[in-house]
Image (cartoon, rainbow, N blue to C red; front, side, top):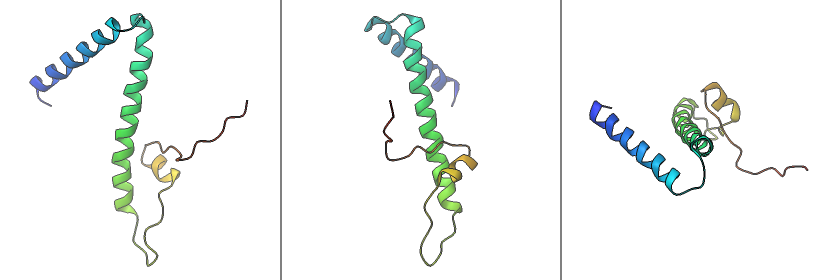
Length: 91
């Protein structure tokens, strides 16, 4: 990113923060939690996508095809893999 792109991103982030403050009853201390959560989720998704490409490229082809990606593959690549199925929580 060049300096102009960084400045544009900063402006967009501040505008988004101001819109959140103006359109909710949350205080600055309260709205940071959902915003930081969204940032974390976005980072995790980006990291997952990068790791998936690397892992798929590193799995050798066999006569049966490539094996399925595993949670351990993602952990070794420094990413998180969430299960596709939701598990029921016991209460």
